[in-house]
Image (cartoon, rainbow, N blue to C red; front, side, top):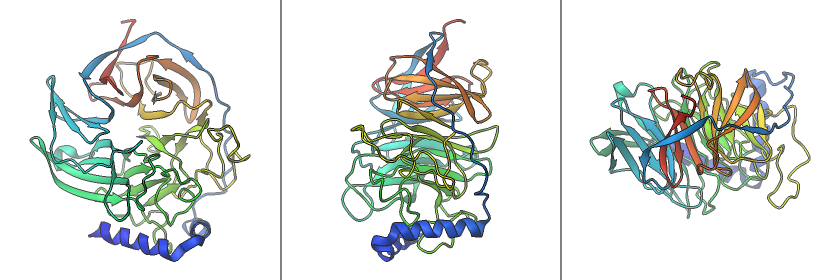
Length: 398
């Protein structure tokens, strides 16, 4: 019921804002910043220039789960098994070398970049059994679909207790920029991303509209009372930050407790951003990229009232999947980031010093489109590779 009420409220707000919705949304944001007292006058940090990636042949991989098509996300179960989402809507339970299809998954709108997307366990999964999925959903009015968040429980080979916690609106038949990744912070809040659905001049800068946003919810889908736009007239109160293009990587940084995302830019300008309460990350007002045709989107790369990325790629690598390595099995990787590249089909190591990227290294070149990367509970690094399956990183020098 709470979701229906939220969606109904959003629909009314869209009617109320009409053609002036974007301007009114911007005005509300400025008012909210003053009311919340968020620090918006800090000196901006200098965004470093892009750096070239080095090459390394130190690593290989071995297949763990074979025969998958487009494994979009995966997570590890306490019993040693693994849950894998296929973009076409299949949910696969893998354990002891056997793959089993899970029944009762969400109805998926499989179009373009949309489909069954991320899967994450609740931090207290062993006590409550909740599993969270993001997916492209046809639910609601209008043709097409939009990004949704569901939670469910697994009983045998069946999903039960399914609850749709959030459904972005409006539906559209556009096939691009659904997002979507999920992460929990140390306080148990749930974050998930939704891309701007190919409506760059409509959605990301307007807080009265879904899409181009990072959302923050309680684990039951209710809205935290301290979300930045709670009480703002016509605002979508689930929004935590906005001005995003298409975040397909999201992690909890275990050292800082912050949520970090990386997101697809246009032609050039993929970014890593540190999510902040109420922050505007600028798309498409500021960007380091350009149109795919080579024409300019804007001549601005930064504004004082918008958050700069801590890093950007040029050219774009089409990043997907994100991991912060804490494992002692790979001491040379520990404390650094791993990112999958869809475009160039490799795993990228980003050597991290605080919030600065010092070095890029290409691992596993020409291995396939890297869709997701995670550190497993056994300390190993696992990758989802399109057309192959789930692979495990190995060190050639051992």
